[in-house]
Length: 329
Ligand code: UT7
Image 1 (tube, rainbow, N blue to C red):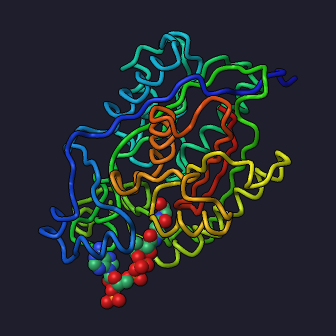
Image 2 (cartoon, helix red, strand yellow):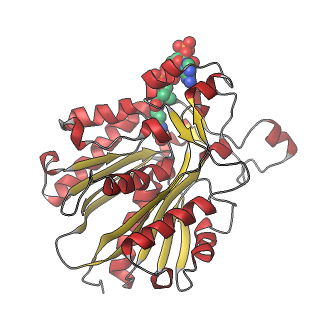
Image 3 (cartoon, helix red, strand yellow):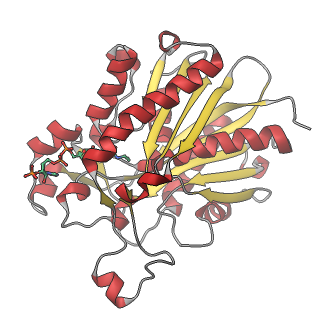
């Protein structure tokens, strides 16, 4: 029997490693240029974690900030869902490690693997579990240490990605605010256009496989670009239709921060003015599952997204997966 509730965002937080890698730094590593990267992607710099530090410290920092913002104690959290493809270990779930770090003693915790769609997939699952199980406080996190799976000799990929984590604390809402509509979708037909072959059961980390850099990102950028724009538009049209709203009702669009040209193409098709589109890809690069919750937190704390605003979030990533959500703050 479903509970008569829906989820609202009580607080948000974000964390990024201190170390910054600029395009000029990359020029010294691979055959690239600041001009190419800025023109083709909009990225100027990205934050990168120290090797061997893992995702848990970043995800835990983002979670602590979100809890503080929400005014909720860690012990009040019933569930932690972490969207990531670069967790600390193959298992256990990094969500369990975060649970221990922040002291969320009473929570269940698991990870979701949906690449760049990880946060919005997690948000929809959190909302559904709040309605069906009756959870009152859920911590939803998106976090990645993508620099741990980059091939630093491949300019097609190593220039694009960065590290970080963002988190949101969800509570139970009774008024018109909160998650109004959400959509998640996948198409496994294109799995090999963007993937990391190792170190799962197909290519375990044998010395031979490691020599062939199996545990690095492979991407057909142009193809991915093409599907990204159309899929993001598909996701947005579905949530707007479900809510009985149009793109004119959106106060702020928070798109996945993969490439400025993708964001601009989506904005143009929706006829949204620049001030209604949140963009921070220049400073973080593509942080996959972290990009939307980091942007959401920055938008809230900088006054770009305020109480009562209709925020549309939309993403696209490996799988392929895509997702969109409408939230009234
Ligand atoms: O987050 C998940 C979703 N991921 C995405 O949304 C990524 C989507 N794809 C993209 O953002 C773009 O396709 C890229 C930024 C990855 C690539 O941009 P592009 O305009 O599609 O370039 P391209 O792949 O067609 O490459 C054009 C040229 C190639 O040289 P040739 O073959 O024409 O001589 C590349 O080798 O640009 C070259 N190139 C570079 N040159 C300098 C590719 N990467 C670089 C680089 N620096 N970093």
